[in-house]
Image (cartoon, rainbow, N blue to C red; front, side, top):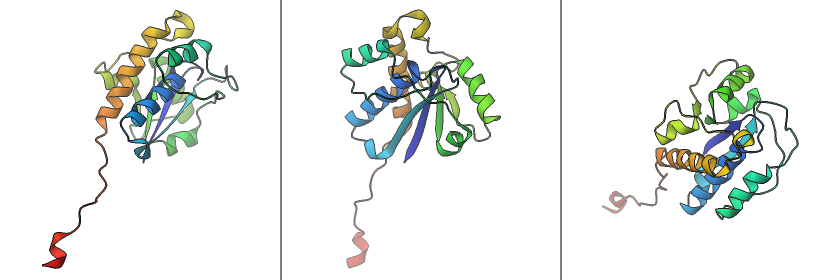
Length: 164
C-alpha cells in the first residue's frame, strides 16, 4: 500500500482538498486498496478546526465526498510512516524541514511537481479567496500522482506449467 500525506500551512484548505480529491480519483479508478491518504499542517494555528467552508463548498460543487475532520500537525513519525509527503508550496517545504530535520529518503515533493511544474506552488485560497484556482491546481497535481503509480495487478494467473 502506498501511503501519502498532503501538507499545507493550516490543514484546513489545500491539504484537505488534496486529500479528498485524491481519495475521489483513486475511488473512481477502482484503486482504493492500493493507497492510504491523510493530510496535516506545518503550523499549529488551525489545530482542531474543521475544513474551511470554501474548501467544503468547492468539494461539494465538484461532487467530491468529504468528511468532517480536525486539523492536525505533521510529526516526525509521519515522515517515517508515509511513503510520499506532498507540500503545497515552498513555505510548506521549509515547515516540513523544521519538523523532520532532513529529507533523508527524498520523499518530500511539491504537489505541482506531479503536474509538470517542478517549482510550481498551489496558491493558498485562505489569502486569495480563489478556491476554484486552487482546486484546478490540486486536481492536476493529484492526477499526476495517480498517473505516476501504475496500478498494482493482482497475480491471478495460474501456473500453466504445473500440469505439464
